[in-house]
Length: 185
Image (cartoon, rainbow, N blue to C red):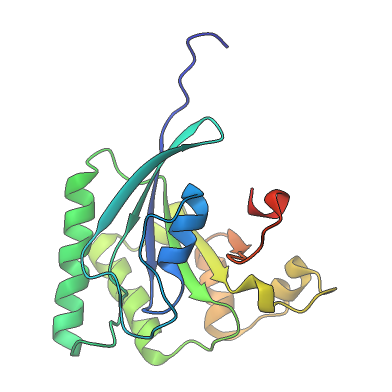
């Protein structure tokens, strides 16, 4: 449609240090703009914002420090999360279309991660993930070939099942390493 301008999409990446947030942001934007590595020490120390047109849509990704940052004490880490969220909200007053909860596939949830999710609900809104949450499992290349992902999700229990329900079944298995263009889209 001539003169049609699609609504921009604003995404905030939330996840533990080492979960693959920055790599996910790079994949979403189809360009390496966020620094990422395999370290369990957070590479991202402040909120980074990158915008790019992808498939005719303007997408802005906000990548912040890992929640439960391994380099910091509990209080320092919480303060960093609060500062990062405040910074992201201040930089994006129109709000976010989605909060992507980034979790590495195959790892168990720790008590610290559960506490972090509850802490985020406390400071953002108790229904934030029900309304805007998308659970993203990274390292999808490790998912067992031939297994139906939706069936696998239904078989989950514990905190993962709780998070799936909390995000109203919005869950994606993401393979950052694939070169298959169709899979990336």
